Structures are given as structure tokens and as C-alpha cells.
Length: 402
Image 1: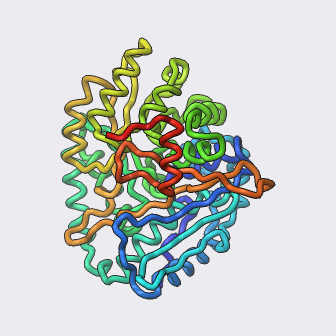
Image 2 (image 1 turned 180 degrees about the vertical axis):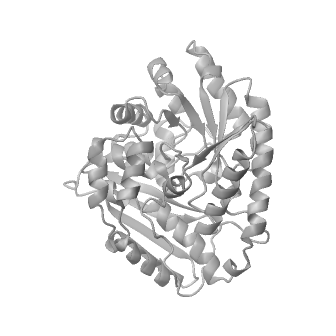
């Protein structure tokens, strides 16, 4: 079996930016992660064994001088000490436990220093997705020339409609080649003429480097959820926004607000934060309902929402993005991060519905216990964590489900 991950920066930018913020603010924090397959997929026999072998191969994947140089150039907001850290970073297979039960279901756990294990999630998810298609024989049927043409047409439609968009599809891509095909097609289309819209770049740092694009992304729910576990969900957003601005000083200014739902974020999003952050990212709930909540919040603070960027990233496809663009362009500065629809939209192939979520944290290795945490989404089906923990957090923040 070929090695699936071959480049250190074959990863989403938000993992690197969060890693930097974690070292800066929580250098001794310890965490646990768990894998969730929302489709309860039955994996081929021996899948976990090959996954463990692929994780072991990560121990030989180190960052190159070329990658460091690119990060210094494009990610100016990262402090120089962080690049020194990355030069010495090494993956360790003992951070990961993966096995299959007697039904063939896959189980994965990470545990260790937050600053170290944080760089596993996207790589392991990308391995699982590509490995599944290889071991089930579906990889042999992927037609990449047809996929290039299909993606080029998507780009044409989005650009013509005035959409500002980027690729967010590393985690659940059909393969590395699939994501690279997307980047080629998107860039070729964008450079073919002047458009109303804009192809901004990709969350994948390696492919951004290879194709001279901007690496795109800020943070994931993980950052807020871990803080919620350590300090409680009531003020988790407030603490996260403070820590984030202290590290990046206004750069990477799009905040992902829905780790514990809109209402508790609304209480934490005061005028100073609203002015400081360039905008917000919508990743769950009804896109239009969330848009109106955001617009109303900005207006209540005396801020014109048309000056703010709202990034939509909730299960988007080309049609949904264009629909949102046409509606939202008069209310804000909309943009779109599109994932699986870009990197796993092959005919006859069902994309995987898999995530790895941080489920427990402790602020220092000296503690002899972890605090559980969870993610409370604006979509009921996206709540992640132990049911009793979700219930406890909902009670703490007075979360009301319809």
C-alpha cells in the first residue's frame, strides 16, 4: 500500500494556526480526541491495521525548508518561534489508537499534549477517506480528467455569480490527486478571464505552496471546545476570542462562533470583539437564519454589517453557494469555504461523513483527571460528545432546542 500523506503541510491551515495559539496560550494542556463515523460505515477487514501503518509512516514526514519559507512569506502573522517549533516537530504513533470491533466499525482515539496531537486530525481523516476507497476498489474507478472538467464548470458558475470562495476539502477528499485536480481546475478557470467573483485559495497549505495560492483558514471548533472543557462553556467564546487576538493581533480575524450555539456566543460577542474581528463563519444551522442573527447583532452594536465578512461553510455545494450569494450580498460581504462538494463529488462514490472531535481536556499534565467537553451545534445531528456531557453543557448555558 502506498504512503498516503507525504508532505508535512498537506494539512489545513487552521491546524497550524491553532497549534500556534495553543502553544502560546496553553503550552501544557493535555487532550483526548475521538473518531465519529456518522454513517456507521462497516470498514473492510484489516482496515485498522493499515491505518495504524499509515500513522506510523507519519513519523518520517517532516517539514522542509521550502515549506518553512512559504509559511514565512504567506503566513506573516505567525511568530518566528513557531517555525522553529515546526522544524523540530515529529509525529509519534503512540498518540493514536485505532481498531475495529467485531462488526467492522472503526474506532480511533488520540491522547497527548494538545500542541502535538492537534496536527493529527486532518491528516488521519484524509488517510481514512482515501484508504477506504482504495481498499473497497472504488479508487480505480475515479476519472480525474472528467473531474477536472466538472470542477472547472463549478468554478465558472461560482465566479460568474460573483462568489468569493476557497477549497476547504482536505479532510474528506477522495484522494490527494482529487484535491490537486480541484486546485488546478479552479486556478485555470479563474485565470482564464476577468470574473465578477474570486477564487481565493485553499485550506491545504502544501497545495497552496505548489500552486502559488493563499492558504486560507483560521480556527476550528476544537479551540473553543477545549476551552469550554477547561473553564466551562459560559465564557468559552470570550476566553477564546481574547486568546486568539493576543496571539495574532488582529490577523486571522474570522471567528467560528457556533461551538456551543448562537445564544451563548451572542452574550459573549461584545462591541469590542465585534469591531476587532473582521467577521464570522457560519458552519451549522440554517444559513439564512444564521445570517439574519448575525446582521441583527451587528446592527444592535451600531456596526454596519455590510462592512463585515461572513464566511459560509456548512455543507455547501455550488447551487447553495450561489443562492446564498444572491441573497447575502446586500447584507454583508459573503464568502464561501466549500469542502466535500469540491474534493469528493465523483459519480457513483458516496463521500464519507467522518469527523474527529476533541472530547476532553486538562490545562496541565499535573492534573490527574480530564474535564469532558462537547460540541453543541445549531444542527441537532451535529452535536458531538457523550450524551450526558451535552445535556450538562446545555443546562449550563440554558440552551433551548426547538
